[in-house]
Length: 151
Image (cartoon, rainbow, N blue to C red):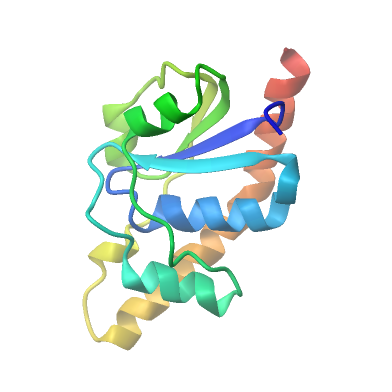
């Protein structure tokens, strides 16, 4: 459905936070919202612990891959992005205003890919960040509703 509103999650590497946010909002919104993610400097692959953390929630991200902002914009064929959400400080600094979005907000999260310690320690950081992202989805949806109502 081309008329669905779109939410774009932006991060630096598009390997963890933005990928998890994309998966979580897509699962919550179903077909009501088009959800995508991109990075200002995309990594080579989605972080394995991001994939594992989403799999623990029954979400399959194994086929996801990091994307550039330009690739996401080009794939949209000039359709607007109603809401761009930066999920890391670097993306917010790099894209203080995303030109293809009707509205942009920042909801920052720790970078789980930067976690140190044992694999179990790192896995716990990914789980915590996933819970924080999930808790922010009401705010994302409310902001999207405001953008749609203001059209």
